[in-house]
Length: 332
Ligand SMILES: Nc1ncnc2[nH]cnc12
Ligand SMILES: [Zn+2]
Image (cartoon, rainbow, N blue to C red; front, top):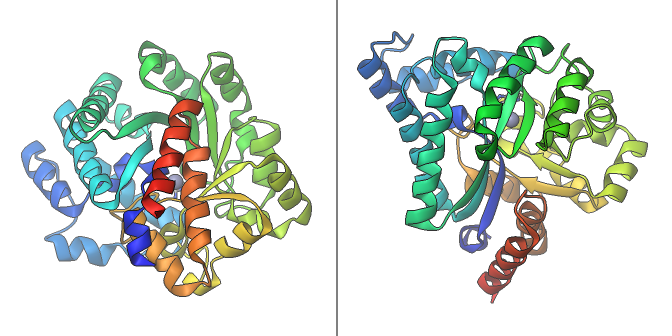
């Protein structure tokens, strides 16, 4: 099974670029930019990555992002993630970034997007890896602040395929961002949102009915509503599931309790993704390995999960067909 996971070309649809900041790069950038971080060494960092829920993770994740200051820092961050894509055979990636985490600290929007964009252009040139960029609004901040961020993003509209919604879910339902998502939709952005990660399935209904999203990020709480399950199946609404994240953030007690196999068996459109791999003990292949080792997934299930990643991506139909053919070729 590990051989199969390694050899299949994949797309990744749920990856926060700030969540790919490895401790080694964090230390290097902290030193270069003279930013204080609350760790004495790499081991100290790893020991701190012991989360009890989403918020305990986010506190540490935002503190880590403080070391990112210049365009080159965002380039290096993105480039290191691209090298992991090469290792794991990810041939297409749709990455999230959180501009407000950086603009709030005085880092220009332009430095963030340009650094990411240049690394992705080099990834295409050097490795043939294709990519899109999705800008997320931080849901613990106000809709007004999201509107300001959307306005800033308009200068880079051609570089950003869609908008998303992340950060502290509980108490910040999708309805809070209804108007800004409507404006983003009218401007031609694709729409995604984290929903039903920790909060109940009513957040998934809101994301579908009030935000009109194209994909649900996480969505694992949908299992608690038979009616919602039927709707997600009928619409083949993509769910970008992140197994390691769900275990590290205690959404499920352990991998054997994860519901990805049930969601898949029901006929939902599920893909596997790494979310914040530097914080959650592994990149995409490790996510596949962990679920395969603990759940009765078949080889056909793995192929379905991988094909779903391409089917649910924002690439055009011609490239989708090319990539799906590559998966079939790898199976021969
Ligand atoms: N898993 C997650 N949920 C919500 N916001 C996030 N930001 C980065 N990772 C996240
Ligand atoms: Zn996420």
